[in-house]
Amino acid sequence: MYVGAALAVGLFDRLSPAAVAVLRLFGAALVLIGWRRPGRGAWRGRRLARAIAFGLATALMNVAFYEAIARLPLGTAVAIEFCGPVAVAAAASRRPRDVAAVVLAAVGVLLIADVRWSGSPSGVLWALAAAAMWAAYIVLGKRVASGGNGVDDMAVGFAVAAVLLSPLLVVGGEVSSALADPVVLLLAVGVGVLSSVVPYVLDQVVLRRVGRARFAVLLALLPATATIIGLVALGQVPGPLEAAGIAAVVAAVALRSRDGDVDPALDRARLDGRLDRGE
Figure (cartoon, rainbow, N blue to C red):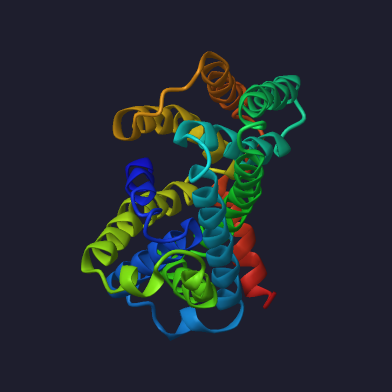
């Protein structure tokens, strides 16, 4: 995911971050549609509505995240964005350790924000917006995965969201020359595959097998991997306070109790029961 993000940063001098995010979505949608070829049932009714909601949440998460990493180091933006998964995980339980995890995550984000607010308050706000959309991605992604056709519905959702957000392609930058450059388009497809197709398909596989809270816990390594990729690929070295904040967020997610998840088999049984009743 973050190798793709590092590639995306290289496109920001040709296109706006939002435009790069939409190109990423188009690239991912083309690959997924070509691979899965969703049937007619994926393009109508409640299933379509659910897929579109998921696709838009994912697309807006990516737009906000790219706007954030255009202003903040990669690891820093991911650590702030992690408020979303931590909130989803903590909402599944009221145990003391879960409350402690939320507090620890808040401390980590405050440490990072204290360092970055004076230099880029907009970057912090974009990262927090990405956090909200990441929470929506987990909740809606679980519903899509539980429906039994997660990857097909994801392909449909990405395709519709890419079309709806296509006006963002003309925001900032030399759009016509950039979009006519085959290298830019090739990089956009590469970013889409690395940052969307591979990780999001794996997300759908995992979400069918575990609950939302445990899925959020399993994301604990992402701030650390983002920091490493930022250091190696982009030369972004976190300062002491930023490093402490990132470590606090990782510790918070690891601390979050793994109890409180609904058994995914029960989730599917309940869904099947609702479908049988015509709900």
